[in-house]
Image (tube, rainbow, N blue to C red; front, side, top):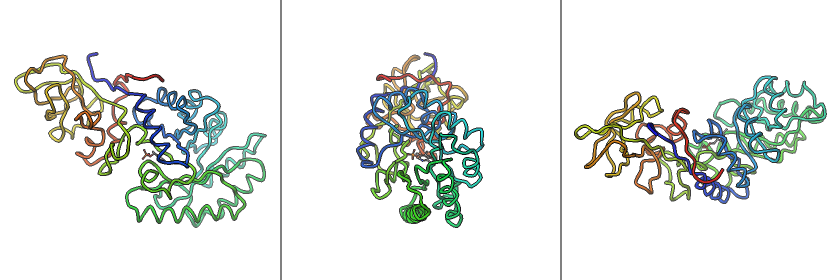
Length: 350
Ligand SMILES: *Cc1c(COP(=O)(O)O)cnc(C)c1O
């Protein structure tokens, strides 16, 4: 290996899945696998999760959803939430996906195609304040009436009602939840009987029981990525499943050059803000270039030594989130930025 490697421990994934399922119970876990399972690699993550008994996957787009279907088999339920053309709806139905519907035109497209003996399973999205698509409360009564008519006509079945929240302040989230409850009541008054209500992602589903409803859509915590500025991994009972390692390629004076750089997805702005775990202890990251970076050397440093860019705080390593905190972003951003060209190496069975 001449460059950096992302080591992913699937046994740790399994342990996090257990922990998350216990934390969100009696709600069921929907494992969110967008962005190539947050950079960890979709296929091994889905295969292992399926083996661990995860039944719901949140795939984001239809292409990913179709791939999850092939990996996880017929028993899985797979939710996608950016199908927005008739062709994508057709593709979603062909892979038996559950479709998030947050606009009227898409709902009308689905109603118009008719059931043909195979009604679409849809989850209606209310905009509870984020304004990142979803149907506005003032348009909701009309929207659910259209959905109810479509259900009676056999074109669709409303399986769920959902929304997405900021998880940035409790006050805002509480307001979003009140809007969500209203939306569910209005849908029921229109004759719908959604079995699945889902609102929360990692942070709210752990911290706030009343946000769990029937399904918790969790990504970050399953991969062991804690929230920036929030509780640590130990308090959450999770561990990072990935470790990004790079070899030393040269040592000159008190500077060691390592084979990882901006082209591999390392933020240039991390230079002089964070440390790298080395065989000689933590050393400052001095500069990030295109395909290499410079760190402070340690006594005996030599080409071939390996250092850790992010891993587990329990091993005195930085984590995706601690790197993120030093540059004002979130751990997910650091994790998904690791280039797909960086090889992933898996421990633990798929
Ligand atoms: C990404 C995403 C999630 C998961 O969020 P985490 O904070 O990573 O758990 C849940 N729901 C939606 C709609 C998302 O886009």
